[in-house]
Length: 380
Image: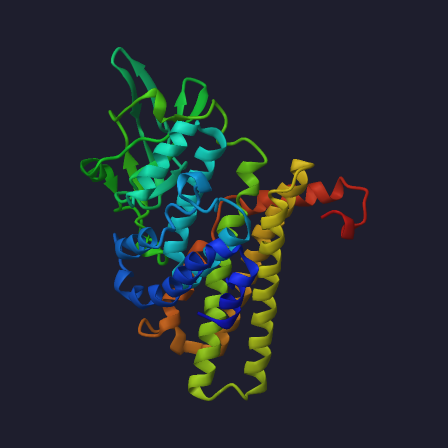
């Protein structure tokens, strides 16, 4: 791990009770990249890495202290954990961010007994996720004489066939509910990964999942109708995936530094200029993510936090694209050879930077800024 990440995860900046967890995350991030190339094929999944997350307590860390966790659904510990995991593997960072998102939604909208049951499941190593994307007619929640069942499926579901507790949205007539079906091992054959042919993030096991005929009960319904899209949590939570992206951006800068040192090209002024520009971009992304993590949890005007997180999304995306271009110019054709350690990192970051509705996010953020009378320096 780089000195920068090690410093940001320093116990001096976090409560003493997290020391052991911080050390375990640091060690995990240093080693998970070693297996990345073995998983770079369609249908792959980082099962060993997820098991290591479970072993060090990362799957239970998002739960409250009284549920055996660290309360890690927000704050600097989550921010740096996401970035550190993303530095080692964007695929694992994506999956872990979905796990945290699901638990945050259960904590925010579910009952105490639902949260306790989820904590027990996570303690057994069961991975959670959030699957919302779907093709028409979508996922439906149907009532029958023998109870509730699901009909339809989800698409672009990361971890399909491996996530044991996916939090999904389903329609009951005109009302949308969150449902947390309890998938058993035999249910995982409902996954279809054949459609995931992306050039990056290949080991994310992203695909479709058919829930048709799967029985659920009242205790599997989380919150009330419409809670999933309730603001500001729905949009303000986007800072989490930006934190994972940040880890990937910093990893590419680190690989660029290592390449120039190994090839003896670090004294070239043009290379130094590109490294300097890459560091500016990466550090700018870090500052945006740090502030977004704070402002997303602040009380006050919800639109203010949403606008800042939306700007953070675009700032981090821009930083990632700039770092990709700078690294590719510096390393040259060698970096596009499959045997080069940075080649897969290029593909994974370029793919993961593609998040939903970036133009709308920027438009809404700019609209908020234009509607304010205060000077720019006082908006946030």
